[in-house]
Length: 502
Ligand SMILES: Cc1cc2nc3c(=O)[nH]c(=O)nc-3n(C[C@H](O)[C@H](O)[C@H](O)COP(=O)(O)OP(=O)(O)OC[C@H]3O[C@@H](n4cnc5c(N)ncnc54)[C@H](O)[C@@H]3O)c2cc1C
Image (tube, rainbow, N blue to C red; front, side, top):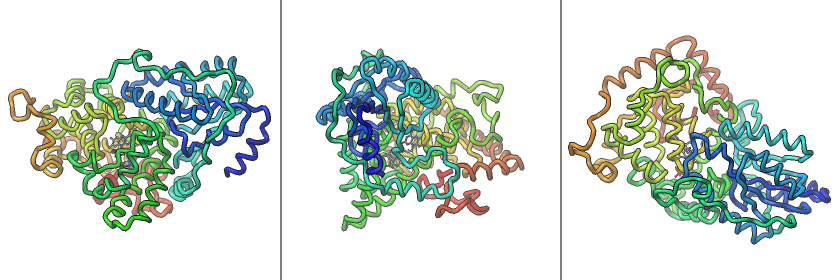
């Protein structure tokens, strides 16, 4: 593939390219950079878009992390002779004004599976390129397949992409004359507040250091450590924010992991890393759902549950603001829920099981529709990745129509994952005093009512017919085979996270 691209590139005498960096803030394994390398003049571009800053999912933490990544990328590209411009504004307008300074004929970028506003923006960019005779080439960077016809065979395609060679090193450019890189803006210059706590280091070097420390030994206890919030922060890879901002490619993570598994004589490490390796596929599996059905970020996957909970745009009532606020603030009176929420707010990260418990609590105990809690969590997660996030929000809320309802008991999670109460006391120091609130709902009554409603609905003919269609469109396939009656519904509890594949 690369030789074909390069011979095409060499033919393009006089062609000049703009490489548009989005969630791919790296040099290594960067296909658009490799494409642009042989052109007559090349310029890199990062655009800080008002639509992003104003979107309800965006938090200053995300912006701060991005700026850190961009500053490093700018230096790394400069060392290769490429200027990286950072502009603020709507993409079509930025392109329009840039074209007056630099007459580019080609635009290269990675494909993006993002929220609705990014799709609308891409349509506007495509229109602008057409009107200006600029050729826009978008290249895949994950296992997500554009215009996928069927999920059958998807896992094989994922493996094919992930095992393909990295994009050629982009190490020497013919720079576009006349344009100088300017400083990366600060949060303040963007009109955003300073961050309350420091962020993890951004950029490509931090991504590799994080991965290397995990593959080098931290991953040994992965399967055991991932469930408890006491051990997960060290025992999980912590690569998620880097994958979200693209400071490392999924292909590099996959290949480095497979190479380490093959090379290490340490059987415990290999066992841990195999568990990690399988989750990398889930990343793309979930993103594929948003690619295939963009409406899942705001509408129930199973339309048969529409109107069930207030706040879904169909139910006539409004979401219970008092409950929502208590949940967001970590003062529900359920210590494990409050501790997790407070950790998340303070650090921007939480392990999978505790994320799932937070959502299950909002959905079943508090009977809140997932959209507003989901927006709040999106702002808290530094690794916010729309395709994974909205799929998981819906799964943990019981609105996909096909997954086993998984209702987490906060008390059981506390017993299992924090038996001595160390974690809870750390994040909820006022526990046991009059300052700590009483439970905001009666757990037994709330969960029984939630089960009644959802199980009752699932028995209906309409819900069952819809479930088959959903499984066919989005469901994971075992061995790449089409779904059968036995894979249609999962009834057995699966290991950590596995039952989460809808
Ligand atoms: C309600 C909810 C929302 C979530 N939102 C996000 C999100 O916005 N962004 C995000 O990256 N992950 C999300 N996850 C999935 C998961 O919790 C995180 O990927 C994981 O905790 C990140 O930490 P890590 O990199 O140390 O994970 P590790 O356990 O080390 O896993 C390695 C990588 O595998 C992928 N992965 C692991 N578990 C899952 C999973 N269940 N689904 C999909 N991919 C997975 C991720 O890319 C992750 O970085 C969400 C889970 C839930 C329950």
